Image (cartoon, rainbow, N blue to C red):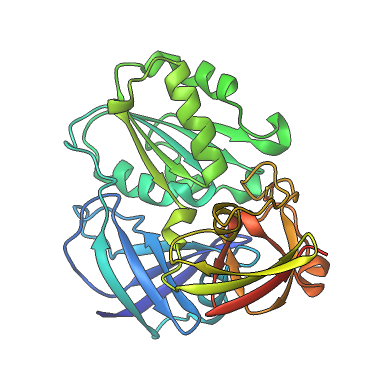
Length: 303
Ligand code: FES
């Protein structure tokens, strides 16, 4: 479906909301797949289908994130966006439930849709790098109790730190959404605090950006060059390891840079990047642990 854009609002220095002049049925926490000239990506709806407000998504600019950056740079009111969906199962079984919500960065988007629709009680733990990065800061005030975790004050979230904040909500169902590193820590915190897996619901934001391209990777490593099939949905580091090669890596979360490798041809998107700078990209470096293909063939070298 082609959805007309009604409004584009700057929410933070690197995030915009895109409101559609359209009405369609969806559940709180579901997402749309947006198709652009540079690829497709899923974006959660930040609105409640019950409120009568126009549906909107939030798009956060990310380094190496072709689709999100294209939307931030190009989409204006009056444009039309090709969208598929809505889809997704990150939605409460009952809107009368009492919930514990944990969001990291733009992971607030589906959580916001749930908050706006919920009739039960909710409490939110919301992690961001600093106060300027908080999306929906004003809207959240007064809606529910919010505990902000700011990385610039407390460091990156830790399982023990989050567990101390959530132990009073052990009887609730927990909904977690954010980048993979945040989700991993939040899941561990919930398990530490005694939440059974059956009451932990997770939406991994970056995994929505999984590539649909079947590609080929030419990998030069340890003095030899290997041609490896790179199936859709897999990250580059995983296919290299699956091929029996021995590439360097450590965190596998886009944070440490140990998997950095120079790309000599082709294009990739990075699902998360917290380490490479513009000058690294200019020299061709990518993070193998976060790379999904944008072209049918790429070449990389570890020399
Ligand atoms: S292994 Fe740490 S950034 Fe890839």
